[in-house]
Amino acid sequence: MNGLPQPLMSYSPAGGCACKVPQSVIEQVTAFVGGGGGDGRLLVGLDAPDDAAVYALDDHRALVVTLDFLTPVVNDVYDWGRIAAANALSDVYAMGGRPLLALNILGCPREFPQEMLQRLLAGGMESVTRAGAVLAGGHSIVDASPKYGLAVVGEVERDRIITKGGGRVGDVLVLTKALGVGMVSTAIKRGVASEADIGRATRSMVRLNAEAARVARDFCVRGGTDVTGYGLVGHLHEMAVGAGVGARIHRDRVPVFEGVRDLLRQGCAPDGSVRTLDNALAAGWLDPGDADRDSRILFADAQTSGGLLLAVAREDADALVAALHAAGERDVTIVGEFVPGAAGAIAI
Image (cartoon, rainbow, N blue to C red; front, side, top):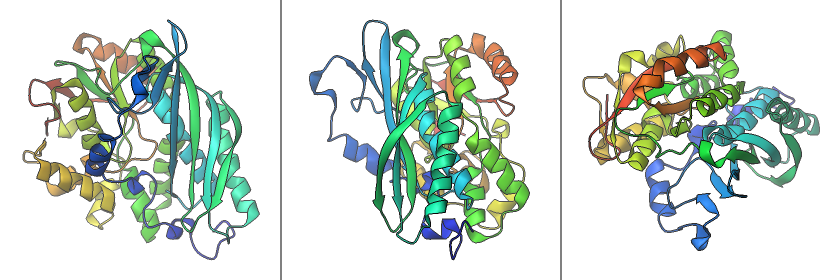
């Protein structure tokens, strides 16, 4: 229990990226913020919301700047550190960038022992070090609900920037990690996850998206994001809105962790995932077809440190998938395509 009187996840009402503010609320709030103040060096900001801000340094290079923090998604504090850091670094990878520098963001209850906090930060440092970046400090506060993450600065060539809205009709959609992290995290919180379940989810979450981003850059992929708290359908919706196109998901091709459907039948669906699905159905941009309720929830499952979702020209798709497999992305799968239609509309 990491020196705590109760499991780590019991300190938080929602685990990992399932703790995100609802997608519909964020869309409305950020619409009032604007961004950039007319500074032409801000290449990506809130005018077209994306995974990170991109700020031009010169005609060839740009900085990628992001921050991300989350509540516990597993009970092992060292693994939580590794996962939270990998999740934050992923926003840089999703833009086609390479991380350079990171700062810790930490909130913790007063009763958390020092040794546990040291292991948490050590886990974060491991992920940052594997990314080839430098961990240079941070900030902490006392907080009733534990939170940890990073602010990250990366770099990207201006002609290799990947944005949510970079896809086009006819592009194939490639997903690099299996779904199911949200289900497993909820099962851990409820005490019904097996060691095999926990192991599969943890291995996926600690794996950096570095190689997937490298391959995407090599193929000059222009459209992409990482799949996190709003699930596959939520983040695909953002891509389709940005690109001004519709999208189709092939439900039988979407990779999911072994055992996840059993957890779903036990009621281990994150509240945030159900909320994302119900909001999408109510808004009318998701057509579930004849997919059953369990499949619909899986496609909205809140991922933490999920895979990249890439939009690639159809003629390059097979070569991209082969290159990702060669880079160690074993679960990579073509899961759909962009189609003509209302911007953001998704059919399963």
